[in-house]
Image (cartoon, rainbow, N blue to C red; front, side, top):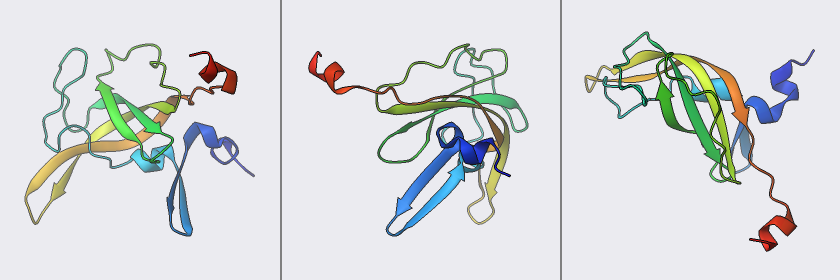
Amino acid sequence: MMGPRETDPDRTSNCEHSGAHAVIATLEQVLAGVPVGEHTLELQCKKCTRKIRDGDEITVEASRMAEPLRWQLTRWWCPDCVPAPINSPTPEERTARCSCRVATISDGKTQHHWLCLLEPTVTAIVPPQVRHHHDSLSR
């Protein structure tokens, strides 16, 4: 039986093409382990500047243009500061919001540590705006 992830590719799927091979994964799989911030242990809420630490719950917003097919983290907030609506993307942009925990990744060889996303759950997604041919002619 197919679940919502298999039947609703606009909701959570991501496809990376590499030559003759394509990798398809849910957005949760793509964002799990992604570094957040500037590859340090310092992270602040984008609204109230509260310090975010390992183990904290946060909400992140990620965007993806049609090309390249890569999700980029654009903003993150503590639970008290999450804005209600997702900002309207550009015509070519897809935007998603996920709740997750923050975890620490450590590189034993270099002794560097940074924060990453753990157990992301998609809470909202806005597909790219569809621009019709007559819309582009009138602008």
